[in-house]
Amino acid sequence: MVKTGVSFALARFVFISCLALAVIITSLVVNHVVESVNTEYEKIAHREINTLSNNYRVFINHHLILLEEQARASLFIQALMQPKSNLGKIQDYMAGLTLLGQKYDETLLDFEGSTLYSTSQSGINYREYPWLKSILSGEVSSSIKVLNIDGKYFWCLAYPVVYNQYVEGVLLANIPLKAIHARQGDVELLDGLMIEVVQAGQTIATFGKQVIGTKQMMQWQDAGVSFAFTIDESYRNEALSKLVIQLASLIIVAIVLTTLLAYFYGYRYFVKPILALSQLTSSLEQGNEPQALQEDLRFKEFADLFKQFNHMSEKVAKRERALRQSYEKLSNTNEELKQSESQLVHSEKMASIGVLAAGVAHEINNPIGFIRSNLEVLADYFSDIEKYYHEFNETLASDEEKENHKRLAKKYELEFLFKDSPPLIKSSISGVDRVTEIVKSLKTFARVDHSEKVLIDVNEGLRATLNMVHNELKYCCQVHVDLQPLPAIRVFPGKLNQVFMNLLINAGQAITDKGDIYVRSFVEESSIIIEIEDTGMGIDADNIAQIFTPFYTSKPVGEGTGLGLSISHQIIEQHDGKIMVKSEIGKGSCFSVHLPIN
Image 1 (cartoon, helix red, strand yellow):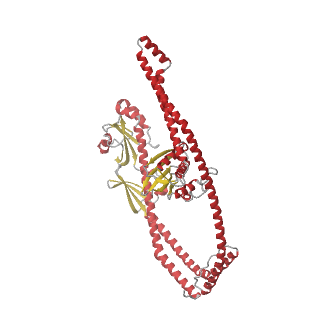
Image 2 (cartoon, helix red, strand yellow):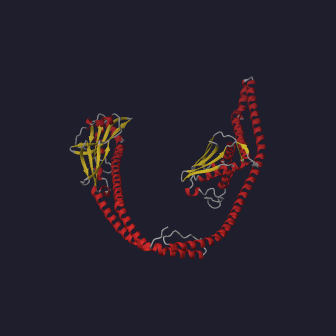
Image 3 (tube, helix red, strand yellow):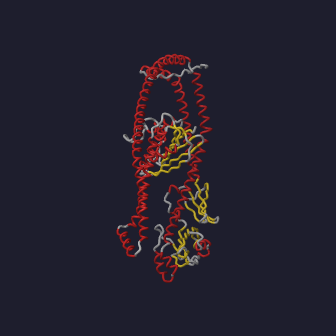
């Protein structure tokens, strides 16, 4: 590297800095910021227009809902059926009707569109409007139109009066056109905005102050009108003026900063290297890890000094690293011994439980067998007794003997016994079969692992495990099982069942109230996939990477050892497989066990 003088380097730095700042600020930043402000202003204005349009729509819909409730009044149906006798009641009733606390003109039309009664004195003939025919014929369920009544514009809301699914009349409400705008209380939203209501190309109403600017149209097809929103551009111009002032201020600040940079340049290339050397020397004296100083400096004297210092600190660092590595190796060995001890205790405990469970299952199997056999024999005995009863009844010759026999049978409820006993015996046999199935699953789950892998059907162990944890899961969730036919593979059955049990119990514990667990098995490419998915609380993304770490647990103290998933992960690795997890907070988790077929 070519070394340069201090004065030349400082002068060149100041020149390049000032030139770069001037070019960047004047040619790029100003244009970019102005365009960004214009874009954001347009977005904000469009959002305000959408908000106001939605408020208008909500205003109309609220009035239409209330009009619908009024149209369902039984008095309107009676008046349409018997107008002469109920006209006085309708007049009194409609005189007190309001929509959202406001009194508007309302009109009741009969099934032909003729005015039955109206609170308005306009005398408008609604039959000439085609939308009325659509309501009376049942083609539409309601109507929103803008009508010119005596030179004034109104929102005409119409809703049919229905009786036995037939339209018997129509209830109308005329709301002044400007009422839709008068209810808008957000003055800040309306400031700088002019709204025009346009019908058939003609402006029929204007809201807000007269402004000049960009105009945006919104169509209300159902009402036959459009809203023209004009945004006052003076607001934008004012904002741009403020922006120019701000940018000018930034340029002044940039010039000041450039001047300061010239000062800090000397600090960086002279004072800072000396301070860095002093601080690093103090750090080495305190026994901290040394850090290499930058040798590629502009000034030769500093570069040579830093190079010699780095060479000296590297020798010191090598000695400290050797000591640290020995300490870390000893600590890792200690941690591995603790983990191996915990896993060995857990494995021995599971093996003892398995031997005990297998013995209990064998002892239960024998009495269950003769109980089932006795129940089957008992069923045959009841069948023979019933046959004897009916055949004996047929052998009786006289009516007196038959009547006496019938009386005794009724006294001891023989007919009821013959009818009720077979279902009881059948239910008992079914219960015994259920116990037999549980014992079989217990023997399958608890069988002692071989020293070598054996060829089994993974679904068999999965079903046995499901039967074992059924009592643990039945109170908090519903288990959905979908097991596809799988090829037999060589595994350690007991260890694999332990993995399934850990995953199923964890899934049940993840569900706090009620939920579902989905157990699936299928073949994908050259692997068997077992998925156990729950709809529980899920796992935070920051914790997923730690769930297979020994002794890590998110459960309260005393409720988990943190070894279940760690041991499961190691067991799957012994089978040359992998275990994966996908989880989302509030939706649940899905653990996937991949076992190679070959």
